Image (cartoon, rainbow, N blue to C red; front, side):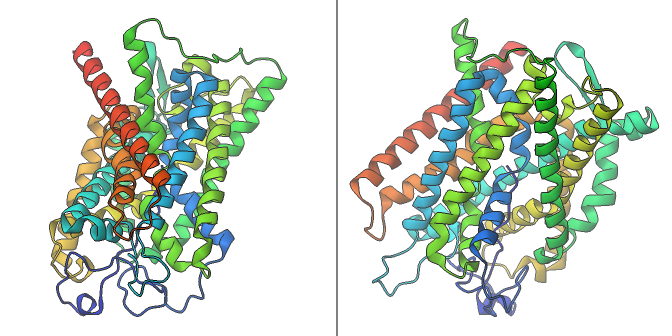
Length: 468
C-alpha cells in the first residue's frame, strides 16, 4: 500500500524547543497555522475536492498492488476480485469510524482530535496512542522492507517456483557481479538514492518527487492492461482459474494468508486527518473517502485481473518480477516489459523517503514522547535515521519475498490500524454519538480482524515448520 505520511505538528512551546506532552495534537486545525514544524506550507487556501481525492488515492495505492495478482492466484478470479471490493467497503466504514468517533458533536465547544493518534489518545489515553504509534512503526517499517525487496527483484532478479531465475535489469544491462546481487544493488540504491532523500528534514521538500512517483505508478497499470488486452485479442491467454483449488484442510487455511495482503493494500487511516484538515470544506471528507476507495478498488481490480490473466499460474508473489522477457510480443513487448519494471522501481524509490519520514517521526514520538522535536536535535535525527535505514536494508536482504513481509505486517499491525482501533473507538464512543448499528459493525470488524489474523498467522507458522 503507497503511504502518504501524517505530518507531525507540535504546539507553540514544542516549536520553540520545549518538551511535548503525549496528548499534544499531531496536527493543527488550520494548515496555515503558525504552529507547525516540518512539512508545513503556510498561506494555503485549502485543498479542493479533486485534490483531496488524489492525495488519499495516492496514499492507498502503493507496493500492495504488486502482491494482489498472487492473491488472486490463490483465491481464484471470482472470489479474489470480490474480496478486493469487500475489503474496500470495510475500509471505507473503518475510516468513517475514525472520522465520526474522533470528534465531538457539532453542538459541543470541545475541538475534535486533529490526527488518528490524537483520536485514539482521546479514547484510550497515552497508552492507546503509544500502541497505535507502535503499530504504525511496524507497518511502515514492513512497507519499506517490501519496497526494497521489490526494487531488489527488479534490479537484481529473483528465483520463482521450480528454481526458474528471472534476471534483473542490472544483470541484463551490465552483466553479473557483486553490483548485480540483491545486497549490491540495494547498497548502491541506499547510498546514491535513499540517503540524500531521507536526510531532508522537511517533507514538502519531497513534493516534486512524490508527484513524479504518481505518474510512474500509472505507467504500470496502463501497460499491464494494454499487454493483457493485446494477448486476449490474439488468443494467447489460457482461461483463468475462477475458483480456488481446495483439496485438503491445509489448502483451505492457506486462503486466509491473502487477508494481510488485501488489508495492507488499503491502509490509509493515518493520512485521513491531514487531508481533511487541508480541505476548504471539511464536511466533504466522507465524499472524498468514498471517491478514493472506489477509485482505488477499480485500479486494484484492473491490475489483479490483467496481471493474473497475463501470467496465470506462473504469477509470482511480486508480479513485477514476471516482466522479464518480451511477453511473446517480440521487441515491442521487451520494451514495454522494461518500461514497466523501470517505472515502478523508480516509483518506489521516490515513495520510500515519504514513508520513511512518517516512520521516523512516529518512532521518535514513541521512544521520546517528551523530547524536543526531532528536527531540532541533530544527533537524535541522525541516529534514528541510520538505525531505520539499516533495519530496512537488513530486512530486505533476509526476508525472502514480499509475500512473507506482507504476512507479518498485514496480519498484525495493518489489521490493528485498519480495523481493530477504529472498531474499538466506536465501542468506546467517548462523545456518545454511536448508534446500535455502529456497535454491531464494530464487533463484526473486531471478530473478522482477530479471526482472519489468527488464521493467517497460524497457517504461516504451520508452513514455516513444514518447510523446516
